[in-house]
Image 1 (cartoon, protein in one colour):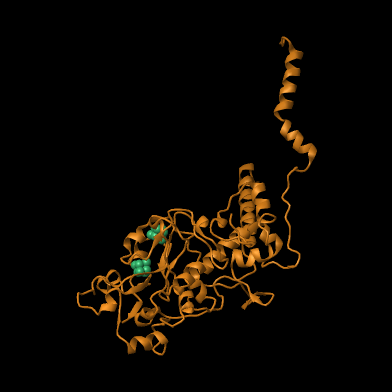
Image 2 (spheres, rainbow over the protein chains, first blue to last red):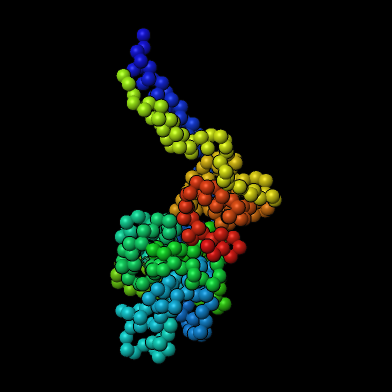
Length: 255
Length: 136
Ligand code: SF4
Ligand code: SF4
C-alpha cells in the first residue's frame, strides 16, 4: 500500500518532470543553432595599412571619418569632453610620440595622421574587461558587445592609444540622422571602432576603406601572403604606434 | 452563547466582505478585461521566422539567441535546414530592426501593445532603431 506521503511525492515528482520536459521542448525553436554555414568575408588576421603619403595629398579630406561616423551613428557633441570618436586625426608627433625627432621632414612633422583602434594582437583593453563585453575574436578583431558593457571604463584606462570613448550622455539627441543598419548606443557604455565587423559579415569592406577616394586605406588578411595588405607591407616601409608597449598593434602606417 | 447585536454585526460583516472583494466580483461578472492589447499584424507578410505560438511566448528568447549569434559568434543570417532564409529575395538577418520590424513596421501597434499591457519595459529601443527615422 502506498501511504499518502509517498503518493504526494510520486505525483509531484512526476508532474515536475512532465512540466520541465514541456518547457524545454517549447524552448527549442525550429531554427538551428551553431551549425550555420559561414557567410561574409573571412580572414585569419584582419589588419589595415594606412598610406600617409596619399593622405597627405589631400589634407582636408575627411571622407573616411564622415563615412564611419554616419554609418555607425556616432553622435556629434558640442562639448569636447563628451566627444565620441571611432576614427579621427591627430598630428604626427602626438600619434607617434616615441618616433618623433627634431629633424623629421617638414611636411611629416605637421602632418595629420588618421587614427583608430589598432585591433591589437595583444590587447590590454580586453584583459581588464570584467564582463567580456570587449574581447578579441579569432580573426583578430577586438569586438564590442554593448549589451554587456557595464560602463566601468577599465578598458578606456587600459588602452594606450585613446581609442575608446565613453558615452557620458544619451547620444540620441545629438544625432541628426539615424542609419537603421546599425544601432545607436546608450548612456553609460564604451564604444570604439570594430573594423566594421557587421559589414564584413555582410561581405562588405569597412566603411572608411570604401569611402576613401584615393585608396589610402588598405584592409585585408595578414595571414594571406597574396593579400593586398601583405603586398603593400612587403613593398613599403611601415611603422606602428607605440609597438614597444608589446600590444602588437595591427594598423600599419606606410611612410 | 449570546451574541449581542448579532444582526447588526452580521450585516456589517456582509457589507464589509462585499466591499473588500468587490474587485473579484467585478472581474468575474465582466468576464473579460476592459483594456486589451490590440495587435496589428502586417498585411503583406504571411509568414514569420517561427510559429506564431512560439513567438507569442518565446520571442524574447529568440532575440537573445539572435543577439549572441550575431554579436558574439559572428553568424548573421537565419538558417533553416542548412539554407539561409530569404524574404522577398533578401537574406534574412538575425536583426530586430532589419528583420522583425521590416514586417511589424509599427512598434506602437505591435510591440508596445502587449508590453504596455503587461507593464514590461524592454530596453531594446534604447539602442535599436525603430523604423521611420525613429527617435524615441
Ligand atoms: S588600440 Fe586600444 S582599444 Fe584598440 S585593441 Fe588596442 S588597446 Fe584595445
Ligand atoms: S567599460 Fe565596458 S567594455 Fe570597457 S572594461 Fe568596462 S564593461 Fe568592459
